[in-house]
Image (tube, rainbow, N blue to C red; front, side, top):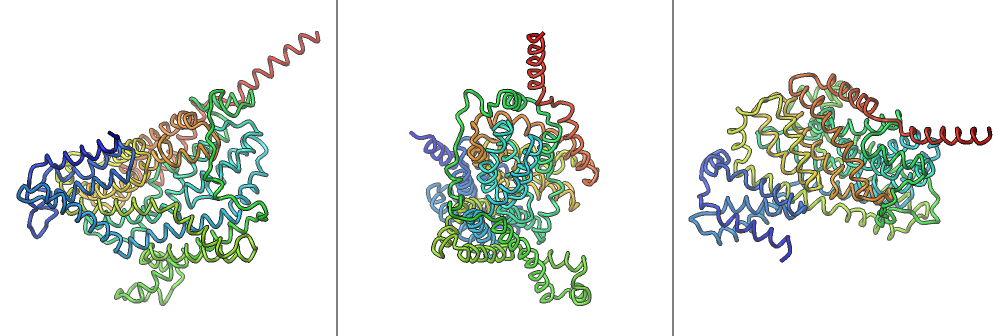
Length: 587
């Protein structure tokens, strides 16, 4: 019997063994259900987490987690089989309800539209042209690593595109300069999910914003989720520190752990791969490659991506402007009428905008611009442009599936009163200062075991914000805990051996996958420890983030400088020995 079948049977048996409890009829069903079901309110996210650990399949895990919750809500009078049928029907209804929500629909559409845009830019050779232009500036191991890092930052809009574009373009350059494939794949991987997760516009933003908005609604707050997302960025310590970690290792030319051995091997022998390596080769990368006859131009990337960014920011302003002007807040209306371009007016307009609609509009328009450019330059025909756009959207269909299941799980937990139960039992027992660190560590463990950040975010965000709000209603405290969820989830997406981004980074860099994981995991754990000790613990104790973040960056640099050893040490020693022998022979 297959493993997945065993998991499914075990999950069904688990639900069948639950005691029959009646759905509470109460003016406040969430609070009543929290009291009625007790610990069983935690079962849906628990099932999702445990099955994710076992099966490594986030879609199956989320599905069964939602089914477990709807089963609890449907069980009455001990009729198990009737409850199972109704639970399945309720699950379908919740998924359809999630899709029917205009905000959710906008989020899914903007993700798909950005995916189509990325494919068009790749097919026009825009990304390749930018990469090759930067690669010409890489003359030394230090500059090559910094250029690879910079290129990874520039391909901020999608982690998959980052892994499949940066690695293949920079690989010939880094090979020539004797930089190990392990180091190349680390830089590629560490500038994929970490930068896409904090970029103001990317395929990640919609998902993160939607989770934030939904979680805040459970505590009765209707917030501008995009503004909250932006506010979490300074608290995304792991994302920021791992990006700075790359810079420090490149500037100091120092490494430690398994990466030191790999880099010294490459520098001293020229072997960019170990003798036992079995490099992965990216088949997906060819889908983003332009035709051989295509004339490469950086403008094929700058113009479409520029249209996306500028269009999004203009859209944020005008969408929010129209929303405020159509509202009843006379003070804000007066502000926009008297000083429409002031910082305060722009801030308020952005805060009142609908991010899901604006990002979809900007991505769709940018996609049209890319099509017109490609057709005008005879890079592809209209039919080929549409096919490429659709192909790009297909790559993000799985994101839509995970989104719908995550929203459904959040809805079930809200109805069951999961957050209310946790708040009532944990708000008085967890010290305020320690919660962000606990959330981050828990996110790291789940995301590493499952290999997905999306599933981790979907499970933890609906629980974290109500709990943080109960411990302290201070908005900055809630935001730092939301940031801990988002950056903890990135940890696993960055370095888990089963993460699709980690696998694509190995493929794009043509590196042995196990060698890639072994060398970068040592670095990821180091940055994770710094994140807790010099990031979340200080801010939890009340140290302002504008002090904590720079200090954490300095500590990261000090760690590389103090614990790292010069990569060139072996080469220098060998050269000295050879020169000594040569002098002796001549003598």
